[in-house]
Length: 360
Image (cartoon, rainbow, N blue to C red; front, side, top):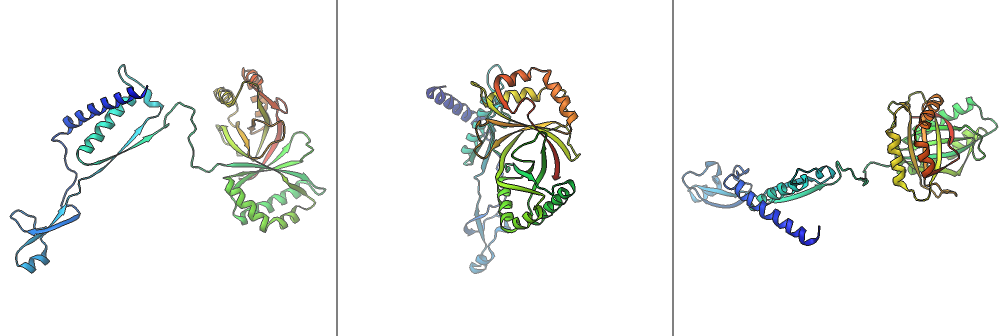
C-alpha cells in the first residue's frame, strides 16, 4: 500500500469513526465524576439548594452570613486502548480483516474520548499470537553452561572423588553460588581430559561473580583439597549459551544420564532456517523416549577450526533409551536431511559421555 492509499484509508476511518462516535454516544455520555471535585476554585454566597456540606464556616463566621466553597470538577479521563496487532488478527471475513475492524473500533473510542476532552492513549501489542519467526526478547536471565576439563591424578579413585565432590558442594554452599553441576566421563579416551566438570549457571553474571569470589577466597584451599586426585587448567574452561530444542516429557530423577555432542557446520546453501525446519520435523516425530531431550549450544569463545555453526547435544536417561531412540531415528527420513544439510563431527554417533549429577 503506497502513502496516498494509506492516507486515504486513514481519512475514511476518521470520517466514519467521528460519525459513529457522534451518533452513538451523543446524549448518552454519562459522567463518571461524582461529588464536588478536588480542586478548590472560589468562595461564594450560599444560595438556596446548595449542599450545606460545602459551607465554609470560617468565612461564614467572619461575614456573619453563609458562604460555600466551590470546587472544580475534573472531567478529563485518561483512556487506554491495548490493541493486539499480531498474526492472529489477519483472520478475515469476506469484507474485512479483523485488524481493520479493530482499527475502526479503536478510532471510534479515541474520537469519542477527544470529543469529551478525555485523553486517549493507545498501546500496541505485537506478536502475542503471531505465526512469524520473529524472536521476542526475554527479560529472563540467560542460563549458561560451562565445561571445565579435568585430569585424573595418581590418587584418583571413586572414594577420593566422592570426598572431593562433598568438599566442593560445601564450598559452593558457603560461597552462596546458585548452579547445578554434573561430571561427564567420555566413552572414548581423550588426550585433553579424563572427565569434564560441567556447571549450569542461572546467568553469566552469576557465573562471573562466583568465579571472582572463588579466585579471591577459595582457590588455594580448593587446590590443596584436590592435590594428587585431580587437576585443571583454567585455559580449558569453555562456556556456551544453551537453547533447549525439546523438553523431556518426563523428568529423569535417577541422578545419571548419557549424552552425545555433535559439532556441526552448514553445508553450502543451508543456514539456520534449515536447522529450525529440521528441529520442527524432529519434534513432530513420534516414538522417542519420554526422557530424551536436546539443546543447541552457542559458544561464547572463539572455537578452533573447523569452527562449528552450532553444537548439538542429545541427553537420555540411559544407554538403553539412547539405543532405542537412535534406531527409531534411523527409520525416518531425518538422517538423509542431516546428511544433505549439515556436516557434524566426530561422526553420526557423536562424542558420547556418561553423566553423573553432583549438584541440583
